[in-house]
Image (cartoon, rainbow, N blue to C red):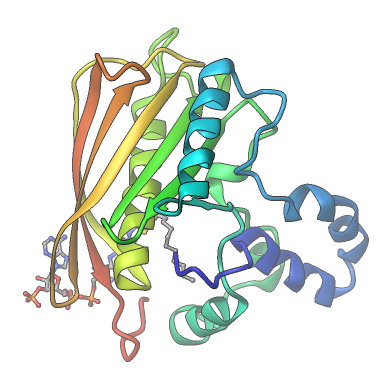
Length: 230
Ligand SMILES: CCCCCCCCCCCCCC(=O)SCCNC(=O)CCNC(=O)[C@H](O)C(C)(C)COP(=O)(O)OP(=O)(O)OC[C@H]1O[C@@H](n2cnc3c(N)ncnc32)[C@H](O)[C@@H]1OP(=O)(O)O
């Protein structure tokens, strides 16, 4: 996402809730939870996730990598996005309850992750710990949860390179199951950009890089500001 961004989907919708009045109290009560930066260590992070976080924070100090806060969206982007692409007739009450899917679980139960970007190399890395509510086959992570995180990681990579995009195609080869509650490393990079098409690839490996869990390719389309989405 662009480096100037500063508001998350959550915060955006929180703002709407506050304006609505009838649900304002609930909004303020949850404000601290909603507004915080989720891409920082919390007590549910295991040793692997903490080590990878520390390792990449050192790379950030060296200058080539940057940590991406989870609330990394600009108010201007949202206003533009809403004005251009979102149907104004959508029920405001429902919209006000919207939350970013990957950040809507309690700490440790769902998606715990942090992303780092290297804009010069057009890469985004995501360290992802799959919580117990993401189970698919017993003891392993649900394929849809894996797809979600690949989409989020490649989407971030495409967005940083191409601006506002949507996923048009996502292909995943699941090669080994990911043990639940383990940490995996997702590495994505831009392969090419052709007009409005942004091609991104991603691989998912174990922390020691010995196991290749999944490989994916994604196609993102830069949105045409003159076209309604629906
Ligand atoms: C505030 C901002 C927030 C942003 C946050 C981002 C980061 C967060 C990440 C979160 C991650 C979560 C992300 C999510 O959850 S995104 C949610 C899941 N995705 C969707 O719902 C998208 C649904 N699809 C669409 O709305 C439209 O199809 C889009 C917008 C994608 C394109 O419709 P549009 O009318 O604009 O374009 P076009 O049809 O003129 O096509 C243009 C060109 O593209 C080519 N083409 C199109 N589709 C395909 C295809 N499937 N394979 C191969 N090629 C395809 C097409 O042939 C043409 O090529 P050419 O003829 O020009 O050569």
